[in-house]
Image 1 (spheres, helix red, strand yellow):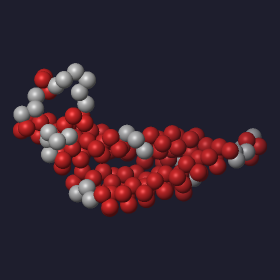
Image 2 (cartoon, one colour):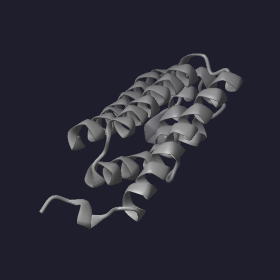
Image 3 (cartoon, one colour):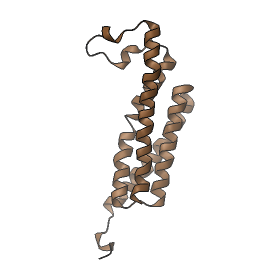
Image 4 (cartoon, helix red, strand yellow):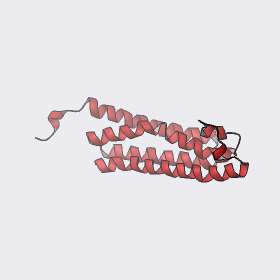
Length: 150
């Protein structure tokens, strides 16, 4: 069951890279259209410097990419803990639900970005992550090595 538990994490990693490429693929043309020149960027400049320079709808992809670098950092070790401890079907299902919700959240934020719906998707994914985290704590705190086959 370890591979099945790790598969959702692998997919979320790939999805994060898709969002990175989508960010670059929309930001660079928008920067060129706005007259921004990377060679003229101030030292230490950041993506946030493009707020108000390029259209908000273009920046939404970057905002989502940043979100994928935040909460999922809790998801990844949780999945690894469960995989090591022996994930069950419920764990795998919860992990897939979390990844599905994060992908829906990404698509919604990148294309529509109505905050009320986006927040609802975020809250749902957070509850799933909380359930996974509790299961990881239970798997480690209540592990009985004596129950393992000899």
